[in-house]
Length: 300
Ligand SMILES: O=C(O)CCC(=O)C(=O)O
Ligand SMILES: [Fe+2]
Image (cartoon, rainbow, N blue to C red; front, side):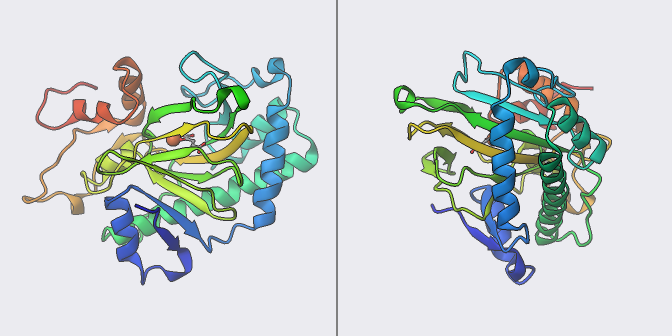
């Protein structure tokens, strides 16, 4: 199944196409998103230089929530490193990240512009998704929005091995700027087969996470995905994750619950859900099954 392409300028006329992408694969590509290609290119250059910093500097970026700061290679993902910040919607967070990593004034300007424009884009895509589900005027602007840069240290020796293990994203919605030339991302389709995603420079890839599945009362799909090393070339990607409502509480809007669509999941907070994912060792959405309404409450 190819990844559906959503032309932002054709919404809301093509809401049906957006909805079936969310209900089916749980992933789509956006074009005509108004983010300048030049900014995407400049941001990629800035990100590459942040990864070239000495480890001692990269490690100064400690977590605000689990996984928001620098993550070096681990046993499970030995080729992968990442860095980021908790909330791209907060200019102070973006500034603090740039200061910690001694970003040049040029890089600071690029990173700040990118974070602000991408935050606007992700909130806009989320509102369009809500609209396609029948909720007009639903704003996601105050939802925290994690920002992460990913690097995969791929070489001749690592071709065929895993870049990042199979997972779902735990939040609501992810917007990804792929590496423009190095592929390796694979989505799992509804039959359980892996679909390789070939990069399309200039576009963004959007995928839905666990919070989207719970918030939509099971309507949209939290796509499982992984990164494989297929080429002996380092790979860099940039992700924004719209996480959960500002107060952290995940509840479906009333419009999604009625007698023919009984409520599927208990109310939970994003923070508790992240803890449950870690403590249960389930990174591919299985932790949601522990929160269905037909069991005793697992999280407060
Ligand atoms: O690098 C990629 O293509 C995917 C990254 C990813 O899945 C993530 O950051 O959650
Ligand atoms: Fe992911």
